[in-house]
Length: 134
Image (tube, rainbow, N blue to C red; front, top):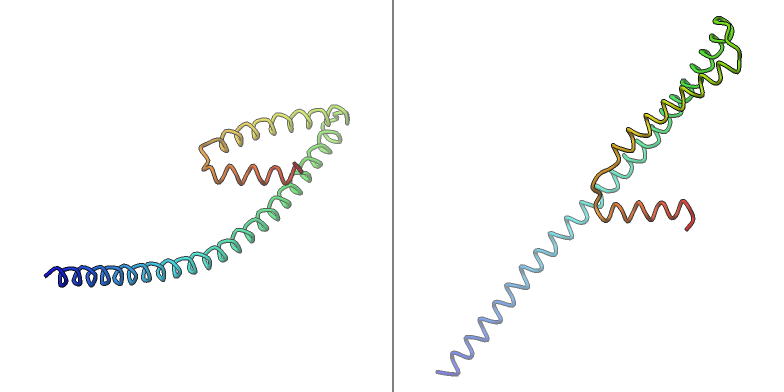
């Protein structure tokens, strides 16, 4: 009787290992499929983000051109039509630009505060160090 129960225990253990091996193989193949799909999605998202960044850069360039053109036109209007001196008009523009940039930087600083994931902070630190050269 001891021989038959010992033999049955080994057989059950063998079946358990075989079942566990099959489940592990199934889980591995599902994970491999998931990883392949995720990598394809990352490639699509990377392209989308790069195109978006290029378009944002072009839009910002056009916006800067329009802003500079508007400032030159307003400066000329102040000097030629309103009779301001060049120095007074330039000082007024410098003051207005300083106030506007201070407000925008303050708002932007408040909006960028927040909890970041450790991976995000590590990436930002690494990028900053690469740009600064440390």
